[in-house]
Length: 458
Image (cartoon, rainbow, N blue to C red):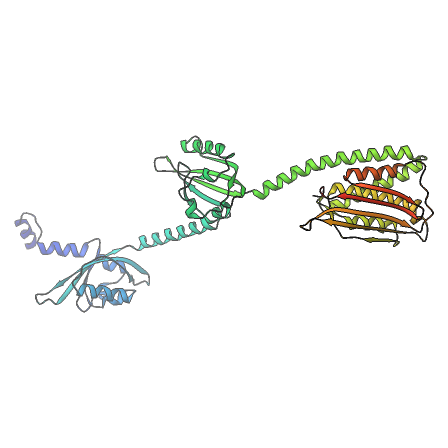
């Protein structure tokens, strides 16, 4: 009652000591007093609640007992002893439940008249939640950065003018430019001139806000001068007011896909061409065989044999994806089928274009069929030899082939009274190869010589 009257007598103003005591005890921020020896003298309710201790468990003990890092409290006390003032010094305190509290300590020292360390007043601000949030943010940023750099796609961030702001490592690999070469440059600077206008038009619409995103395929001009096809997905990142902040361009290298599409297109065109040529060849074979056949059985026998020869030639080329064919393989397969070990083949192997391989396959079929019916292979003692030489240029590249088919040991050969389809086919094959051929009906056996250039080989 006396305190109340005293307060009233002073016009309602509380006693100063009461006010300071209330401020100390009920402040929202933790507050404690420590003497020069590091012993805790007082602690307010907020300090005790922060760490979970009762007054008797906290007061009178060394402040170092509650610091998680010995080096930190040693540094704090040393600074304060020198008269320094601490402002938001980061530290970690041990709570009663075993958890660690992250705090910021602000403190100053009260010295006595002799300059001795009397005590220090320490304000303790709990920032545990903020530290945890900052750690989570750093971890998320690190994960995002790792994902950004290790993504399977190239990623570039560009401003409203298309200038590079940031690029990841896969984007460097796709374009061949390093970071220093790209940053500040415009995305259209490395775009193929034929593809830049369409991409620029779409990007300008995106910057204006007409569209949020767009996709396009275009070509980049790499740092090494090569051209690569890419698929680009461009999207907008907005600022706080909805304005265009920057664009994100996700880039995939589709060069192999485009090359595969082009190969398929060429393959279809080539297949169409070859089918037409094959049908023309079959039509010619049928017409010429019918013209020279003695009867229907003779026609069937000859025509089927020539179709089989054409089919075998196609099989050989298909095994090598119609890229080329081996001259030695063509000769050995034809004579191995017909010669039964009575053929000698000699010559350096050489790759032939599909066109040349088909022509030679048909020629060897005609020669082999004739030898089996009328020539060397129609006699038990007959033999065939096929040998060839390859002429090379000064770079050792094959440029010309000289080939000879020779039959010996068969029936005596007499020149025919008229030229048959076989002779005309051999001449036609030589003409298709832009070569020169000679067919000689020597008494000892037929001889066919052929020379042709290899410029047609592909």
